[in-house]
Length: 81
Image 1 (tube, rainbow, N blue to C red):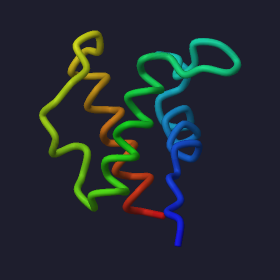
Image 2: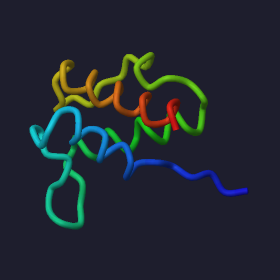
Image 3: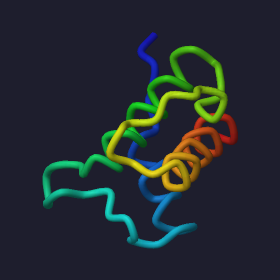
């Protein structure tokens, strides 16, 4: 009964739609702050059933524009599986 969290799919979706700027990766093994925020948004949406885009919280080092794109991709990934 495990829940599959599609964070990897969200990373691919973000890159397919918005490219590599900002990069979601710090290095080959670790996410950047953008990748970590995307993963958190995917976790939130999947585990609560609520849209990440409805959450007002934004990580302080991420612009509102980028945060909105990240939340959009999380919602797209989770709710359009």
